[in-house]
Amino acid sequence: MNHQLIDPQGRQISYLRVSVTDRCNFRCFYCYTNEEPVLGDKNLLNDDDLIKLINVFEKLGINKIRLTGGEPLLRKNLVKLVQRISSIDSIHLIGLTTNGYLLKDKIQPLIDAGLNRLNISLDTLKRDVFKTLTGQDGLDRVLEAIGIAEKSGAFPFVKVNTLLIKGFNETEVNDFANWALKRKIDLRFIEFMPTGCGNWEERKMIPESDLREMLNLDLVPDYENEDVHSPARSYRVEGYPCRISFISAMSRSFCKLCNRLRLTSDGRLIGCLFGSKDIDLKPLLTENLPIDEIVDYVQKTIAIEGFRQIPLEKGAIYQHSMKSIGG
Ligand code: SAM
Ligand code: SF4
Image (cartoon, rainbow, N blue to C red; front, side):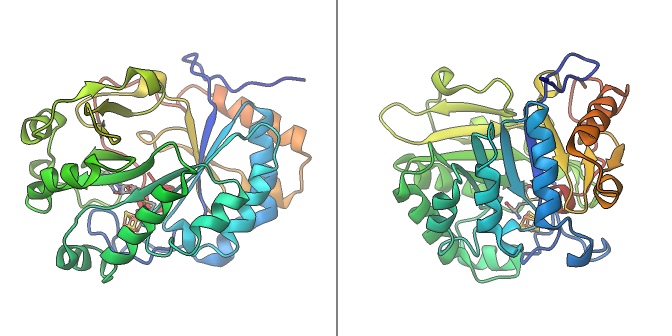
């Protein structure tokens, strides 16, 4: 029997973002607070449970999985997990969002295991600023990892996520653009969003319109590779291999075409970043319910009015902590 996940607003879901740990080796001030408890490894879904749930979602029409965190490379046996996911029939796209610190030695094993999409977060090209932001003297190794990923040719683009914050890194906008131009990199500028961690300030948010004025570039929409479900709007610069994208959750709503769900590392399914509702799937695993029963349960949950938020016109306050759901 063929199942599909369609919410009450008619949006079909095909993409699941999975946080594999809420631990992190960085301390980015916009994301990390000491007040927020860390779940720790004993509350994590183990690999078998995670694979069981991904099988459930595959039966419901999910074909893309992204592993995120916390820092996903802190999870033990991540390469093996990727390998197990890639052997699930209809999962064609497997992505990773990472801060890049532990990446360089893992790139080839991850590619061999089936990873075919890669996003690396990088907010500054200055060594001292990087150290102050993250708590690690790690700029060189992140840049090295980006270079290795780019050279591997395994990814359509290596995506670099750059969160812009006024008074912190906006003076680097054109340095980033110049750095990316000659590379096969998709440089994605992200608007600063209010999240559950509470460190957001409106005055520090740089709207896409201001950012475009700051950039000295002639941007041409990249219609050819457009993914209508992606929150990013992408552009090319004639004569260069790079792509420049904007993820502007505060200036523009992308709810109407949202095709994604999120799973936390302890097994909570989140229908929407802007809603506070989640359901705990862990008890279904503890009871060892057969896959078909979990499939029914998830399908009924998606149909509950309000589990997936009604499309919003504009950015609102995210209810969840980025560190636990991974963006
Ligand atoms: N640790 C990994 C990393 O940094 O790529 C994965 C998790 S991190 C939460 C995923 C993304 O969320 C990062 O690119 C980060 O910049 C972004 N992020 C965190 N807090 C944010 C905020 N308040 N507004 C916008 N993006 C945010
Ligand atoms: Fe920074 Fe990602 Fe860690 Fe958050 S989860 S503190 S964004 S590296």
